[in-house]
Amino acid sequence: MKKIFGQIGRLKPECIAEYRRLHEVDVHTPRWAGVLETIHQCHMQNYSIFIEDDVVFGYFEYTGDDYAADMAKMAADPTTQDWWAHTRPCFTKYKPDSPEAFYTDMQQIFFFE
Image 1 (tube, rainbow, N blue to C red):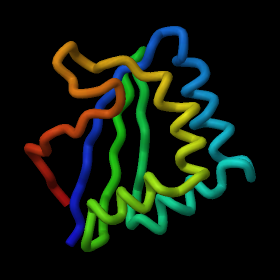
Image 2 (cartoon, rainbow, N blue to C red):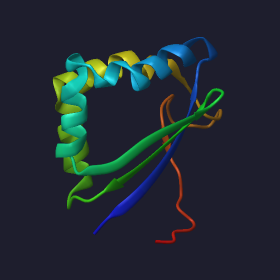
Image 3 (cartoon, rainbow, N blue to C red):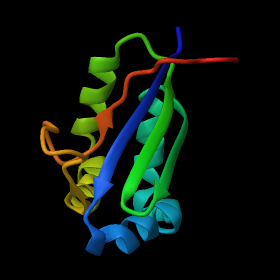
């Protein structure tokens, strides 16, 4: 069964241009091909990231059977770890009580297909 995720995050102002470049240009280069392959192997589909000023919103559909195992697989991938070493430092906490400076899962309140 498909599960839909919406995630929100906030970028450090000095990192917005770098984060955009990483996602608009660099992710499509051979160096980062493994990141996209891992996303696919971990049953994430229709993955999109949107940006407005320093706010980023991610959307994806998960079609696997074991989300925790797939996220562990993603976290263990060396290319993904390298990608995160470039992207995660771009974040600051979305709001003061956010558990970490990265994406925060949002609660889905409406769906129409």
